[in-house]
Amino acid sequence: MDEAIAYFLEQGDPVLQRIIPGVDLEPHTSSGDVFQDLISCIVDQQIHYRSRKVYFKKVQRVIGQEQITPRAILAKSDADFLAQKMAARKVQTIVSAAHTWEEKDYGQLDWFSLPEEAVREQLESMQGVSRWTSDMILLYTLEHPDICPLDDFRFKKYFPVAYDLETSSDWRKDMVQITEEWAPYRSTATRYLLTWGKQLQKRP
View (cartoon, rainbow, N blue to C red):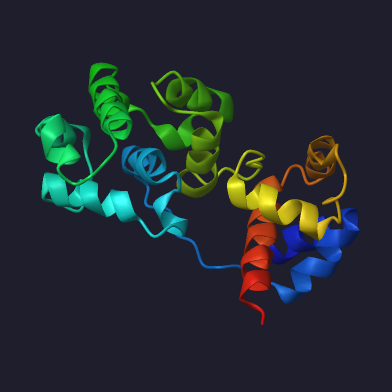
């Protein structure tokens, strides 16, 4: 299946046709835990699959356990988190997320069965949760096949380089048009592009 998707993407996009053969996709296994990954996005501005997890680890340290749950967060005071030199706004956001998760009983939702827009609606209704965050959850946690995180820092960094759009003042519009051609496999195309960019940075 992966080879078939790669072939589809290569046939529809000459840039991906050049990139894909030289890219070994990084292995990825979902945590399966929407709340924990949500907190990672809030505190580190990166989902923990791809970040140094600085503040994510601080939250784990404060609650005294590896799995981050709403109840574990709510059992601690704001001062406990602030003592770890976490910004007050981040603390307020994760506490608010924990309250909302409990009040709306989100833990009982079958997130993996929800359609994309339903996931976005639930997540983005929460304080401090942006479309980028819902993109990360859909792409990495729920592993939806057709997600393209246009607002992702690394995506926006590598895309204009790959498509030679760095000098174009309207490259965002070009980016939208190009990525629409990746459907219905935008998630796989995104992973190829991000892995390619990471490999490019490592070259001497």
